[in-house]
Length: 122
Image 1 (cartoon, rainbow, N blue to C red):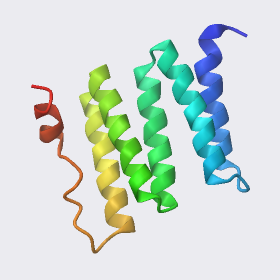
Image 2 (cartoon, rainbow, N blue to C red; image 1 turned 30 degrees about the vertical axis):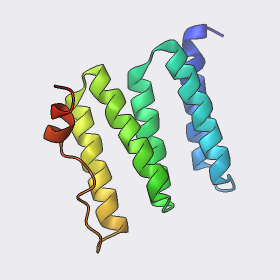
Image 3 (cartoon, rainbow, N blue to C red; image 1 turned 180 degrees about the vertical axis):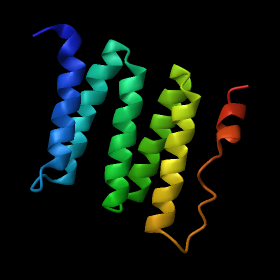
Protein backbone atom coordinates (compact mmCIF):
# COMPACT_ATOMS: atom_id res chain seq x y z
CA UNK A 1 0.00 0.00 0.00
CA UNK A 2 0.85 3.64 0.06
CA UNK A 3 3.31 4.78 2.72
CA UNK A 4 0.94 7.66 3.53
CA UNK A 5 -1.66 5.14 4.70
CA UNK A 6 0.61 3.40 7.23
CA UNK A 7 -0.39 5.72 10.11
CA UNK A 8 -4.09 5.26 9.37
CA UNK A 9 -3.71 1.49 9.22
CA UNK A 10 -1.96 1.42 12.61
CA UNK A 11 -4.62 3.71 14.09
CA UNK A 12 -7.40 1.43 12.87
CA UNK A 13 -5.57 -1.64 14.16
CA UNK A 14 -5.19 -0.04 17.60
CA UNK A 15 -8.86 0.97 17.67
CA UNK A 16 -9.93 -2.50 16.59
CA UNK A 17 -7.76 -4.06 19.30
CA UNK A 18 -9.31 -1.73 21.90
CA UNK A 19 -12.84 -2.72 20.86
CA UNK A 20 -12.22 -6.49 20.86
CA UNK A 21 -13.78 -7.96 24.03
CA UNK A 22 -11.07 -10.56 24.73
CA UNK A 23 -8.08 -8.28 24.26
CA UNK A 24 -5.82 -7.72 27.26
CA UNK A 25 -4.89 -4.19 28.31
CA UNK A 26 -1.19 -4.70 27.54
CA UNK A 27 -2.10 -5.79 23.99
CA UNK A 28 -4.16 -2.63 23.51
CA UNK A 29 -1.32 -0.47 24.83
CA UNK A 30 1.14 -2.28 22.54
CA UNK A 31 -1.07 -1.64 19.49
CA UNK A 32 -1.34 2.04 20.41
CA UNK A 33 2.43 2.23 20.95
CA UNK A 34 2.97 0.98 17.39
CA UNK A 35 0.52 3.57 16.09
CA UNK A 36 2.27 6.31 18.12
CA UNK A 37 5.59 5.38 16.54
CA UNK A 38 4.30 5.40 12.96
CA UNK A 39 2.47 8.71 13.46
CA UNK A 40 5.50 10.27 15.17
CA UNK A 41 7.78 9.21 12.32
CA UNK A 42 5.32 10.70 9.82
CA UNK A 43 5.00 13.96 11.78
CA UNK A 44 1.25 13.63 12.31
CA UNK A 45 0.74 15.56 15.56
CA UNK A 46 -3.03 15.61 15.11
CA UNK A 47 -3.19 11.81 14.86
CA UNK A 48 -0.86 11.49 17.84
CA UNK A 49 -3.13 13.73 19.87
CA UNK A 50 -6.22 11.73 18.93
CA UNK A 51 -4.49 8.43 19.68
CA UNK A 52 -3.32 9.61 23.10
CA UNK A 53 -6.79 10.95 23.86
CA UNK A 54 -8.52 7.70 22.83
CA UNK A 55 -6.09 5.57 24.82
CA UNK A 56 -6.49 7.87 27.82
CA UNK A 57 -10.27 7.47 27.71
CA UNK A 58 -9.95 3.68 27.45
CA UNK A 59 -7.53 3.60 30.39
CA UNK A 60 -9.78 5.85 32.48
CA UNK A 61 -12.72 3.55 31.82
CA UNK A 62 -10.79 0.54 33.13
CA UNK A 63 -9.58 2.60 36.11
CA UNK A 64 -5.91 2.88 35.09
CA UNK A 65 -5.89 6.47 36.32
CA UNK A 66 -2.14 7.19 36.29
CA UNK A 67 -1.63 5.84 32.77
CA UNK A 68 -4.78 7.63 31.64
CA UNK A 69 -3.55 10.96 33.03
CA UNK A 70 -0.18 10.47 31.31
CA UNK A 71 -1.87 9.96 27.94
CA UNK A 72 -4.27 12.86 28.48
CA UNK A 73 -1.19 15.01 29.14
CA UNK A 74 0.45 13.76 25.95
CA UNK A 75 -2.73 14.46 23.98
CA UNK A 76 -2.92 18.00 25.34
CA UNK A 77 0.72 18.59 24.42
CA UNK A 78 0.23 17.29 20.86
CA UNK A 79 -2.83 19.51 20.33
CA UNK A 80 -0.97 22.50 21.79
CA UNK A 81 2.00 21.91 19.47
CA UNK A 82 -0.36 21.53 16.52
CA UNK A 83 -2.04 24.81 17.47
CA UNK A 84 -5.45 23.24 18.07
CA UNK A 85 -6.25 25.06 21.30
CA UNK A 86 -9.97 24.36 21.05
CA UNK A 87 -9.31 20.63 20.81
CA UNK A 88 -6.81 20.91 23.63
CA UNK A 89 -9.48 22.51 25.81
CA UNK A 90 -11.99 19.83 24.81
CA UNK A 91 -9.50 17.13 25.84
CA UNK A 92 -8.95 18.77 29.22
CA UNK A 93 -12.73 18.90 29.70
CA UNK A 94 -13.01 15.18 28.88
CA UNK A 95 -10.29 14.39 31.40
CA UNK A 96 -12.07 16.39 34.12
CA UNK A 97 -15.39 14.72 33.32
CA UNK A 98 -13.90 11.22 33.46
CA UNK A 99 -12.11 11.98 36.72
CA UNK A 100 -15.36 13.27 38.21
CA UNK A 101 -17.28 10.19 37.04
CA UNK A 102 -14.71 7.69 38.27
CA UNK A 103 -13.59 9.51 41.43
CA UNK A 104 -16.55 11.66 42.55
CA UNK A 105 -15.14 12.16 46.06
CA UNK A 106 -11.63 13.16 45.00
CA UNK A 107 -10.30 16.62 44.31
CA UNK A 108 -9.89 17.03 40.55
CA UNK A 109 -7.63 20.05 40.89
CA UNK A 110 -4.74 18.10 39.37
CA UNK A 111 -6.00 18.73 35.83
CA UNK A 112 -4.69 22.09 34.60
CA UNK A 113 -7.02 24.67 33.17
CA UNK A 114 -6.64 25.85 29.59
CA UNK A 115 -5.16 29.14 30.80
CA UNK A 116 -2.54 27.28 32.87
CA UNK A 117 -1.55 25.17 29.87
CA UNK A 118 -1.41 28.17 27.53
CA UNK A 119 0.55 30.18 30.10
CA UNK A 120 3.17 27.44 30.38
CA UNK A 121 4.40 28.20 26.85
CA UNK A 122 4.93 31.89 27.33
